[in-house]
Length: 401
View 1 (cartoon, rainbow, N blue to C red):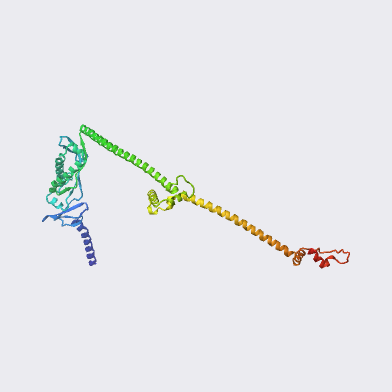
View 2 (tube, rainbow, N blue to C red):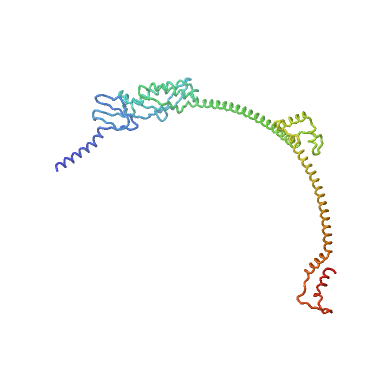
Protein backbone atom coordinates (compact mmCIF):
# COMPACT_ATOMS: atom_id res chain seq x y z
CA UNK A 1 0.00 0.00 0.00
CA UNK A 2 2.83 2.36 0.92
CA UNK A 3 4.60 1.51 -2.35
CA UNK A 4 1.51 2.39 -4.39
CA UNK A 5 1.17 5.66 -2.51
CA UNK A 6 4.77 6.54 -3.24
CA UNK A 7 4.36 5.72 -6.93
CA UNK A 8 1.27 7.94 -7.19
CA UNK A 9 3.01 10.79 -5.41
CA UNK A 10 6.01 10.45 -7.73
CA UNK A 11 3.76 10.47 -10.79
CA UNK A 12 1.98 13.62 -9.59
CA UNK A 13 5.29 15.34 -8.90
CA UNK A 14 6.54 14.46 -12.42
CA UNK A 15 3.34 15.81 -14.03
CA UNK A 16 3.58 19.00 -11.99
CA UNK A 17 7.21 19.49 -13.02
CA UNK A 18 6.33 18.75 -16.66
CA UNK A 19 3.80 21.58 -16.53
CA UNK A 20 5.78 24.08 -14.42
CA UNK A 21 9.24 23.71 -15.99
CA UNK A 22 8.23 24.69 -19.60
CA UNK A 23 6.22 27.64 -18.29
CA UNK A 24 9.00 28.91 -16.07
CA UNK A 25 12.13 27.83 -17.95
CA UNK A 26 11.09 28.30 -21.63
CA UNK A 27 10.20 31.37 -23.67
CA UNK A 28 8.57 31.43 -27.11
CA UNK A 29 9.86 33.79 -29.80
CA UNK A 30 7.16 34.31 -32.43
CA UNK A 31 7.88 34.33 -36.21
CA UNK A 32 7.48 38.12 -36.37
CA UNK A 33 9.94 38.72 -33.50
CA UNK A 34 13.68 38.69 -32.86
CA UNK A 35 14.80 37.31 -29.49
CA UNK A 36 17.79 38.59 -27.46
CA UNK A 37 19.03 36.72 -24.37
CA UNK A 38 20.38 38.81 -21.47
CA UNK A 39 22.15 37.22 -18.49
CA UNK A 40 22.48 38.77 -15.07
CA UNK A 41 26.13 37.62 -14.96
CA UNK A 42 27.50 37.77 -18.52
CA UNK A 43 25.27 40.47 -19.98
CA UNK A 44 23.73 40.42 -23.45
CA UNK A 45 24.50 37.43 -25.68
CA UNK A 46 26.05 38.55 -28.98
CA UNK A 47 23.68 36.49 -31.09
CA UNK A 48 20.07 36.98 -32.04
CA UNK A 49 17.56 34.24 -31.29
CA UNK A 50 15.53 32.73 -34.10
CA UNK A 51 11.75 32.11 -33.80
CA UNK A 52 10.84 29.13 -31.62
CA UNK A 53 11.15 27.90 -28.02
CA UNK A 54 14.27 28.82 -26.04
CA UNK A 55 15.50 27.78 -22.58
CA UNK A 56 16.13 30.22 -19.78
CA UNK A 57 16.99 30.11 -16.10
CA UNK A 58 14.50 32.12 -14.06
CA UNK A 59 16.17 34.97 -12.19
CA UNK A 60 19.32 34.73 -14.33
CA UNK A 61 18.18 34.97 -17.97
CA UNK A 62 15.82 37.51 -19.51
CA UNK A 63 14.54 37.25 -23.08
CA UNK A 64 13.90 40.54 -24.92
CA UNK A 65 11.78 40.49 -28.11
CA UNK A 66 11.96 43.10 -30.88
CA UNK A 67 9.86 43.40 -34.08
CA UNK A 68 11.31 41.50 -37.05
CA UNK A 69 9.17 43.10 -39.78
CA UNK A 70 9.03 46.59 -41.26
CA UNK A 71 8.01 49.65 -39.31
CA UNK A 72 6.57 52.46 -41.42
CA UNK A 73 7.45 56.06 -40.72
CA UNK A 74 4.46 57.83 -42.25
CA UNK A 75 4.72 61.59 -42.65
CA UNK A 76 1.18 62.31 -43.77
CA UNK A 77 -1.65 64.47 -42.61
CA UNK A 78 -3.27 61.50 -40.84
CA UNK A 79 -0.05 60.24 -39.13
CA UNK A 80 2.95 62.29 -37.99
CA UNK A 81 2.05 65.21 -40.16
CA UNK A 82 3.37 66.20 -43.58
CA UNK A 83 6.90 67.42 -44.08
CA UNK A 84 7.03 71.14 -44.78
CA UNK A 85 10.00 71.80 -47.05
CA UNK A 86 11.29 75.14 -48.28
CA UNK A 87 12.51 74.73 -51.84
CA UNK A 88 15.58 76.29 -53.38
CA UNK A 89 13.43 79.01 -54.95
CA UNK A 90 12.02 79.90 -51.51
CA UNK A 91 8.65 78.21 -51.87
CA UNK A 92 6.85 76.00 -49.34
CA UNK A 93 5.86 72.48 -50.37
CA UNK A 94 3.98 70.00 -48.20
CA UNK A 95 5.05 66.41 -48.84
CA UNK A 96 3.53 63.04 -47.90
CA UNK A 97 6.42 60.60 -47.38
CA UNK A 98 6.58 56.99 -46.18
CA UNK A 99 9.84 55.35 -45.11
CA UNK A 100 9.78 51.58 -44.30
CA UNK A 101 12.53 50.71 -41.78
CA UNK A 102 13.65 47.36 -40.39
CA UNK A 103 16.17 46.13 -37.84
CA UNK A 104 19.34 45.01 -39.60
CA UNK A 105 19.42 41.17 -39.40
CA UNK A 106 21.82 40.03 -36.67
CA UNK A 107 21.94 43.45 -34.96
CA UNK A 108 19.08 43.19 -32.47
CA UNK A 109 21.46 42.25 -29.60
CA UNK A 110 23.38 45.50 -30.18
CA UNK A 111 20.15 47.49 -29.71
CA UNK A 112 19.62 45.75 -26.39
CA UNK A 113 23.26 46.32 -25.36
CA UNK A 114 22.90 50.06 -26.08
CA UNK A 115 19.55 50.29 -24.33
CA UNK A 116 17.66 51.30 -27.49
CA UNK A 117 15.12 48.51 -27.05
CA UNK A 118 13.22 50.28 -24.29
CA UNK A 119 9.74 51.64 -24.86
CA UNK A 120 8.32 55.00 -23.87
CA UNK A 121 4.89 55.70 -22.41
CA UNK A 122 3.29 55.43 -25.88
CA UNK A 123 4.77 51.98 -26.50
CA UNK A 124 7.29 53.25 -29.07
CA UNK A 125 10.75 51.72 -29.02
CA UNK A 126 13.63 54.10 -28.44
CA UNK A 127 15.36 53.06 -31.68
CA UNK A 128 12.17 53.86 -33.60
CA UNK A 129 12.01 57.35 -32.08
CA UNK A 130 15.69 57.96 -32.87
CA UNK A 131 15.16 56.67 -36.42
CA UNK A 132 12.21 59.04 -36.79
CA UNK A 133 14.30 62.05 -35.73
CA UNK A 134 17.17 61.07 -38.05
CA UNK A 135 14.76 60.50 -40.95
CA UNK A 136 13.11 63.90 -40.56
CA UNK A 137 16.51 65.60 -40.43
CA UNK A 138 17.85 63.84 -43.52
CA UNK A 139 14.67 64.32 -45.55
CA UNK A 140 14.46 68.02 -44.74
CA UNK A 141 18.06 68.42 -45.83
CA UNK A 142 17.80 66.39 -49.02
CA UNK A 143 14.37 67.45 -50.25
CA UNK A 144 15.30 71.10 -49.84
CA UNK A 145 17.80 70.69 -52.71
CA UNK A 146 15.01 70.75 -55.30
CA UNK A 147 13.30 73.71 -56.84
CA UNK A 148 9.53 73.93 -57.17
CA UNK A 149 9.69 73.02 -60.84
CA UNK A 150 11.91 70.00 -60.13
CA UNK A 151 9.35 68.66 -57.68
CA UNK A 152 6.95 68.31 -60.62
CA UNK A 153 9.48 66.23 -62.58
CA UNK A 154 8.92 62.57 -61.68
CA UNK A 155 12.35 61.39 -62.83
CA UNK A 156 14.17 64.07 -60.81
CA UNK A 157 11.99 63.37 -57.78
CA UNK A 158 12.62 59.61 -57.92
CA UNK A 159 16.37 60.14 -58.35
CA UNK A 160 16.49 62.44 -55.31
CA UNK A 161 14.49 59.92 -53.25
CA UNK A 162 17.08 57.24 -54.08
CA UNK A 163 19.91 59.56 -53.04
CA UNK A 164 18.06 60.41 -49.81
CA UNK A 165 17.68 56.68 -49.04
CA UNK A 166 21.45 56.14 -49.32
CA UNK A 167 22.21 59.07 -47.02
CA UNK A 168 19.44 58.06 -44.63
CA UNK A 169 20.81 54.53 -44.25
CA UNK A 170 24.20 55.98 -43.33
CA UNK A 171 22.51 58.04 -40.62
CA UNK A 172 20.52 55.02 -39.39
CA UNK A 173 23.53 52.73 -39.09
CA UNK A 174 24.16 53.83 -35.50
CA UNK A 175 20.60 52.75 -34.61
CA UNK A 176 21.08 49.34 -36.31
CA UNK A 177 18.12 49.83 -38.64
CA UNK A 178 17.89 50.43 -42.36
CA UNK A 179 15.37 51.98 -44.74
CA UNK A 180 14.20 50.01 -47.78
CA UNK A 181 13.14 53.14 -49.62
CA UNK A 182 11.89 56.72 -49.49
CA UNK A 183 8.40 56.85 -51.00
CA UNK A 184 7.23 60.35 -51.92
CA UNK A 185 3.50 59.74 -52.15
CA UNK A 186 2.12 63.25 -52.71
CA UNK A 187 3.13 66.88 -52.65
CA UNK A 188 1.09 70.03 -52.17
CA UNK A 189 1.96 73.68 -52.78
CA UNK A 190 0.13 76.77 -51.64
CA UNK A 191 -3.17 77.15 -53.43
CA UNK A 192 -2.19 80.20 -55.47
CA UNK A 193 1.13 78.74 -56.51
CA UNK A 194 -0.47 75.38 -57.27
CA UNK A 195 -3.03 77.00 -59.56
CA UNK A 196 -0.23 78.87 -61.27
CA UNK A 197 1.80 75.68 -61.57
CA UNK A 198 -1.17 73.76 -62.89
CA UNK A 199 -1.63 76.45 -65.53
CA UNK A 200 2.04 76.07 -66.45
CA UNK A 201 1.64 72.35 -66.67
CA UNK A 202 -1.44 72.81 -68.80
CA UNK A 203 0.50 75.11 -71.12
CA UNK A 204 3.34 72.60 -71.29
CA UNK A 205 0.89 69.81 -72.09
CA UNK A 206 -0.72 72.01 -74.75
CA UNK A 207 2.66 72.68 -76.31
CA UNK A 208 3.43 68.99 -76.21
CA UNK A 209 0.01 68.30 -77.72
CA UNK A 210 0.62 70.85 -80.49
CA UNK A 211 4.03 69.36 -81.17
CA UNK A 212 2.52 65.89 -81.23
CA UNK A 213 -0.24 67.05 -83.57
CA UNK A 214 2.36 68.59 -85.87
CA UNK A 215 4.31 65.35 -85.88
CA UNK A 216 1.08 63.47 -86.57
CA UNK A 217 0.28 65.89 -89.42
CA UNK A 218 3.75 65.39 -90.90
CA UNK A 219 3.43 61.63 -90.58
CA UNK A 220 -0.07 61.81 -92.08
CA UNK A 221 1.25 63.91 -94.96
CA UNK A 222 4.07 61.42 -95.45
CA UNK A 223 1.54 58.59 -95.30
CA UNK A 224 -0.75 60.34 -97.81
CA UNK A 225 2.19 60.96 -100.16
CA UNK A 226 3.23 57.34 -99.80
CA UNK A 227 -0.36 56.24 -100.39
CA UNK A 228 -0.71 58.39 -103.52
CA UNK A 229 2.66 57.21 -104.78
CA UNK A 230 1.66 53.62 -104.12
CA UNK A 231 -1.66 54.09 -105.89
CA UNK A 232 0.13 55.66 -108.87
CA UNK A 233 2.60 52.78 -108.98
CA UNK A 234 -0.28 50.32 -108.67
CA UNK A 235 -2.17 51.99 -111.53
CA UNK A 236 0.97 52.05 -113.65
CA UNK A 237 1.71 48.44 -112.84
CA UNK A 238 -1.93 47.53 -113.59
CA UNK A 239 -1.73 49.19 -117.00
CA UNK A 240 1.58 47.45 -117.63
CA UNK A 241 0.03 44.11 -116.67
CA UNK A 242 -3.01 44.77 -118.87
CA UNK A 243 -0.73 45.66 -121.80
CA UNK A 244 1.44 42.62 -121.15
CA UNK A 245 -1.64 40.42 -120.93
CA UNK A 246 -2.97 41.90 -124.17
CA UNK A 247 0.39 41.33 -125.88
CA UNK A 248 0.55 37.77 -124.58
CA UNK A 249 -3.01 37.02 -125.69
CA UNK A 250 -2.33 38.54 -129.10
CA UNK A 251 0.99 36.69 -129.35
CA UNK A 252 -0.51 33.37 -128.41
CA UNK A 253 -3.58 33.83 -130.62
CA UNK A 254 -2.18 35.63 -133.69
CA UNK A 255 1.53 34.85 -133.46
CA UNK A 256 4.43 37.04 -134.54
CA UNK A 257 4.24 36.67 -138.32
CA UNK A 258 2.97 39.65 -140.31
CA UNK A 259 0.73 38.14 -143.00
CA UNK A 260 0.08 41.63 -144.49
CA UNK A 261 -3.68 41.18 -144.49
CA UNK A 262 -3.64 37.69 -145.97
CA UNK A 263 -6.02 35.73 -143.69
CA UNK A 264 -6.22 32.58 -145.79
CA UNK A 265 -5.33 29.35 -143.97
CA UNK A 266 -1.64 28.46 -144.25
CA UNK A 267 -0.56 31.95 -145.34
CA UNK A 268 1.45 32.53 -142.12
CA UNK A 269 3.20 29.15 -142.43
CA UNK A 270 4.12 29.84 -146.06
CA UNK A 271 5.56 33.21 -145.10
CA UNK A 272 7.52 31.54 -142.24
CA UNK A 273 8.97 28.93 -144.62
CA UNK A 274 9.97 31.66 -147.04
CA UNK A 275 11.90 33.61 -144.35
CA UNK A 276 15.69 33.53 -144.18
CA UNK A 277 17.54 32.16 -141.13
CA UNK A 278 18.41 35.68 -139.95
CA UNK A 279 14.80 36.84 -140.13
CA UNK A 280 13.62 33.72 -138.30
CA UNK A 281 16.23 34.26 -135.56
CA UNK A 282 15.19 37.90 -135.14
CA UNK A 283 11.54 36.84 -134.99
CA UNK A 284 12.35 34.16 -132.36
CA UNK A 285 14.26 36.69 -130.23
CA UNK A 286 11.29 39.04 -130.38
CA UNK A 287 8.92 36.23 -129.34
CA UNK A 288 11.24 35.13 -126.50
CA UNK A 289 11.37 38.69 -125.14
CA UNK A 290 7.59 39.06 -125.29
CA UNK A 291 6.83 35.63 -123.79
CA UNK A 292 9.74 35.77 -121.27
CA UNK A 293 11.09 32.39 -122.28
CA UNK A 294 14.49 31.29 -123.66
CA UNK A 295 15.07 31.67 -127.38
CA UNK A 296 15.78 27.95 -127.66
CA UNK A 297 12.26 27.17 -126.44
CA UNK A 298 10.58 29.29 -129.13
CA UNK A 299 9.31 26.88 -131.78
CA UNK A 300 7.22 27.45 -134.92
CA UNK A 301 3.98 27.00 -132.97
CA UNK A 302 4.79 30.11 -130.91
CA UNK A 303 5.53 32.09 -134.08
CA UNK A 304 2.37 30.98 -135.89
CA UNK A 305 -0.11 31.45 -133.03
CA UNK A 306 -3.18 29.53 -131.98
CA UNK A 307 -5.60 31.13 -134.46
CA UNK A 308 -3.41 30.39 -137.51
CA UNK A 309 -2.93 26.80 -136.38
CA UNK A 310 -6.66 26.47 -135.74
CA UNK A 311 -7.43 27.91 -139.20
CA UNK A 312 -4.98 25.47 -140.80
CA UNK A 313 -6.50 22.62 -138.81
CA UNK A 314 -10.03 23.62 -139.80
CA UNK A 315 -9.04 23.98 -143.47
CA UNK A 316 -7.28 20.61 -143.40
CA UNK A 317 -10.28 19.02 -141.72
CA UNK A 318 -12.72 20.51 -144.24
CA UNK A 319 -10.55 19.50 -147.19
CA UNK A 320 -9.95 15.98 -145.97
CA UNK A 321 -13.60 15.56 -145.01
CA UNK A 322 -14.75 16.70 -148.47
CA UNK A 323 -12.33 14.30 -150.16
CA UNK A 324 -13.47 11.48 -147.87
CA UNK A 325 -17.15 12.21 -148.62
CA UNK A 326 -16.43 12.20 -152.40
CA UNK A 327 -14.56 8.90 -152.15
CA UNK A 328 -17.35 7.47 -150.02
CA UNK A 329 -20.06 8.51 -152.55
CA UNK A 330 -18.05 7.05 -155.46
CA UNK A 331 -17.43 3.79 -153.64
CA UNK A 332 -21.08 3.52 -152.57
CA UNK A 333 -22.24 4.07 -156.18
CA UNK A 334 -19.78 1.55 -157.53
CA UNK A 335 -20.85 -0.94 -154.84
CA UNK A 336 -24.52 -0.49 -155.66
CA UNK A 337 -23.81 -0.95 -159.41
CA UNK A 338 -21.88 -4.14 -158.78
CA UNK A 339 -24.62 -5.42 -156.47
CA UNK A 340 -27.27 -4.70 -159.16
CA UNK A 341 -25.19 -6.52 -161.80
CA UNK A 342 -24.72 -9.54 -159.57
CA UNK A 343 -28.38 -9.50 -158.60
CA UNK A 344 -29.42 -9.44 -162.30
CA UNK A 345 -27.09 -12.29 -163.11
CA UNK A 346 -28.42 -14.24 -160.13
CA UNK A 347 -32.06 -13.77 -161.14
CA UNK A 348 -31.27 -14.65 -164.79
CA UNK A 349 -29.54 -17.86 -163.69
CA UNK A 350 -32.49 -18.72 -161.42
CA UNK A 351 -34.92 -18.28 -164.32
CA UNK A 352 -32.78 -20.50 -166.52
CA UNK A 353 -32.71 -23.20 -163.87
CA UNK A 354 -36.44 -22.99 -163.25
CA UNK A 355 -37.08 -23.44 -167.00
CA UNK A 356 -35.51 -26.87 -167.01
CA UNK A 357 -37.55 -30.04 -166.25
CA UNK A 358 -36.01 -30.27 -162.81
CA UNK A 359 -36.79 -26.62 -162.17
CA UNK A 360 -40.38 -27.10 -163.25
CA UNK A 361 -40.59 -30.14 -160.95
CA UNK A 362 -39.22 -28.03 -158.09
CA UNK A 363 -41.85 -25.36 -158.79
CA UNK A 364 -44.60 -28.00 -158.88
CA UNK A 365 -43.31 -29.51 -155.63
CA UNK A 366 -43.27 -26.11 -153.94
CA UNK A 367 -46.79 -25.37 -155.18
CA UNK A 368 -48.08 -28.77 -154.06
CA UNK A 369 -46.63 -28.13 -150.58
CA UNK A 370 -48.95 -25.18 -150.24
CA UNK A 371 -52.12 -27.09 -151.36
CA UNK A 372 -54.61 -27.96 -148.59
CA UNK A 373 -57.58 -30.29 -149.22
CA UNK A 374 -60.81 -30.21 -147.26
CA UNK A 375 -61.43 -32.92 -144.68
CA UNK A 376 -64.36 -34.24 -146.70
CA UNK A 377 -64.04 -34.50 -150.48
CA UNK A 378 -66.97 -34.81 -152.88
CA UNK A 379 -66.04 -36.30 -156.23
CA UNK A 380 -68.00 -35.38 -159.34
CA UNK A 381 -66.52 -36.76 -162.51
CA UNK A 382 -68.06 -37.88 -165.81
CA UNK A 383 -65.26 -40.37 -166.29
CA UNK A 384 -66.10 -42.17 -163.11
CA UNK A 385 -62.58 -41.57 -161.64
CA UNK A 386 -61.78 -38.54 -159.45
CA UNK A 387 -59.44 -36.14 -161.15
CA UNK A 388 -57.18 -36.02 -158.07
CA UNK A 389 -56.43 -39.67 -158.50
CA UNK A 390 -55.06 -39.01 -161.92
CA UNK A 391 -51.60 -38.12 -160.46
CA UNK A 392 -49.66 -37.83 -163.72
CA UNK A 393 -52.04 -35.32 -165.17
CA UNK A 394 -52.32 -33.55 -161.83
CA UNK A 395 -48.51 -33.23 -161.63
CA UNK A 396 -48.31 -31.95 -165.18
CA UNK A 397 -50.81 -29.24 -164.34
CA UNK A 398 -48.62 -28.11 -161.44
CA UNK A 399 -45.63 -28.05 -163.77
CA UNK A 400 -47.52 -25.79 -166.22
CA UNK A 401 -48.22 -28.31 -168.92
